[in-house]
Length: 514
Picture (cartoon, rainbow, N blue to C red):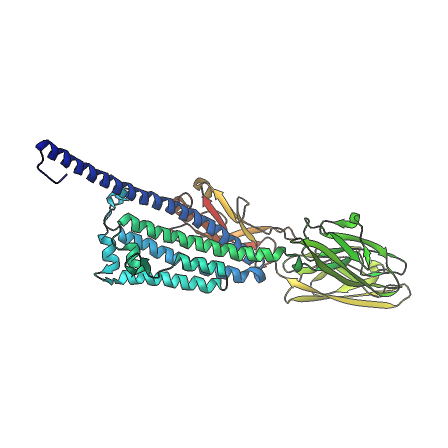
């Protein structure tokens, strides 16, 4: 087009052709900028969803740490450590995006085609050929987060490899030019919207890393819980002693009884138990008690796990006696007594009438005939119950038994009688009542909420007296946005007619705004 002598018409055609090419290039640039912007918006939405998901998992770990501290306390501490590190780094990146977009008006935040300049980011991260202080801090924040996370996850090779890849800041190979510093290759000279999208992607990497660590912690413990090797066989006889010639009656329970469990086969004292006696989580036994003295029960449960048989040994003993020689003491509810509760108990000596039996212990009171008592334990960790009686022939027999004293477990906070993570419209939250309960506890106790704290994202924590939202709480709730997770924690409660018994702080409850 540039050679030879051209006519005026040809020159005009050539000029129009150049303008057309320039317009194509301009449109292509706008399309790329818009693509980056749309990708950034999707990542922002994904990060919001991940925040909610991670909050739910963290809430589950918190609840389990409260219910089963020996198993989950250390896991929950690791999770909260990861959450704190991730939140700090995530917040820093959010502030960094704000610095990068300082010259973009609020109304232009979605006008991606105007975010084609690189001067703000270049000045933020670079000082000529050198890295500026903010650029050095950015690299330091990445390395610090990566190092801290690797320390928490320990020897998990899969997670370690993932973290090292996601937060790799090593030099980048450039074809024909050797290597280039990571910061220059990713941020120098790039359009503003590309930089913002890169930072949002790194925030998404933080959320993904956090989620994977939580799921590894929780999943690992649950996998251990369901393994058959963790179960223990326990023989529970209907009575602790038998007369010669009686039929022994009792049951064999697994240490963690599960109605969904059924053994492939059970062998007791060399005899295979018929399938009709094998029920969910237990085996019904019936055989001759045997000779006077101690008799052994030995056998095994056989389960299939990963297509391989897993054997759980059964080993116990029982006594066969010709006449009563001791007391039978049993708690009607369980093998422990709870402080703050009137524990019903039955105390008797076989072969001796109730009016000839005497039972004594601190906190023990008789409440009627047929060996009925209540135990209201006080201080200490154990209580010993002493029992004595007079046989028809005038002989005296006595016995004693030690029961463990336990406190009432920590209750669970509820909203609309739901615990854990509750989904509600914002208009209903301010009208809700915060309750407390003791799910699966052996006693039906009446609890009343005395105070709680509520945390709305972006708002200060509010302390509320009683069980209903006060004015401050309602004001904070009114500022919540859809998808926000509101935390209700540090819930205090009293036991009705508890005689001053001090209840533990209830486990928290979370509300996702709909």
